[in-house]
Amino acid sequence: MSSDIYMHLVKEMHKKFGIDYKSFPTQQNEKNFRIVALQEELDEFSAAEPDTADELDALVDMAVFLFGTIERLNYTEVFSEAYRRVMISNMSKELGPNSKRGGFEIDLRKPEGFKPADLEDLV
Image (cartoon, rainbow, N blue to C red; front, side):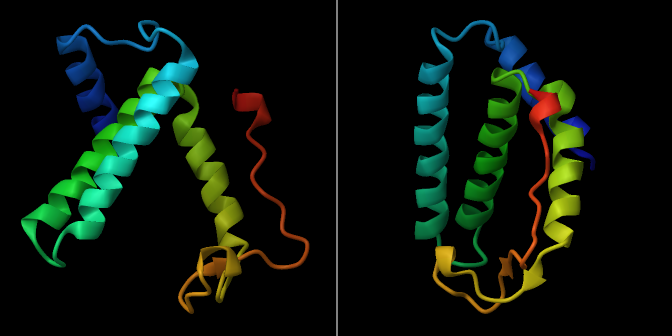
């Protein structure tokens, strides 16, 4: 299933409740709400026992809020291209511990000369 179907489903949910990217009081309020909501779902994921419906539910809820945030902040039209560019950039990384995230062995780190994805033309 492509991300397009997920975006479509979130848009349908927002439409049902009369929510669109133009309806938030301020973009900062919306961003703050989304941060709190995503953190709540991340906390639920963290607390869930592995391989349980609660763990899966928290992951799905995170995706709902992620795609909802993309739609609410009006990034729907550029998200696929931004994702493609970031993934190309990520593929230039190397396997190894990343000290910013605690040094887990199975992580990605930026090699010397790494260039992050350029997204400036998309915003």
